[in-house]
Image (cartoon, rainbow, N blue to C red; front, side, top):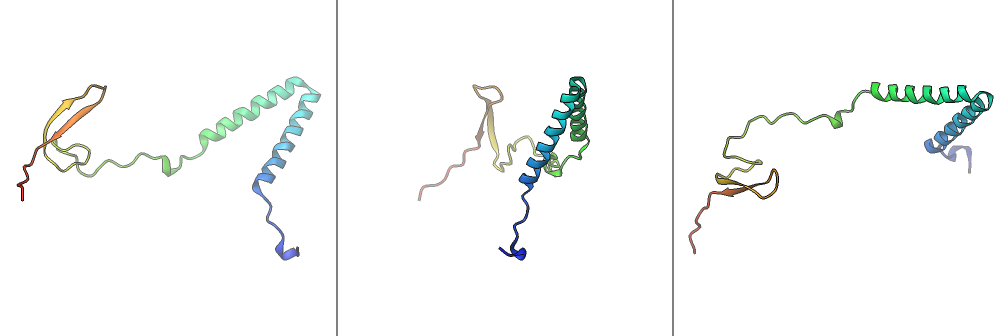
Length: 107
């Protein structure tokens, strides 16, 4: 392999090296003073929680905008048919929608 064909470093490998370094530093703090090690764990956890709450929310999790037109009483779930009647179903929140029947002449 030449210098031009060198592989790009992996982000996962860099993360593993960083995690190993952080664990080694934490082990050294625990070895010096267990109270300081426990305090370090709490401080790191608290700062991680603070950082997670301060990050901006991505737009992908935003609620969709309301529909432009509100449906009338005889339109359900985007249907354009006229509704004959609506009957409450056996389950909670279940409704049975009966559209108006249209007779189709036989050929």
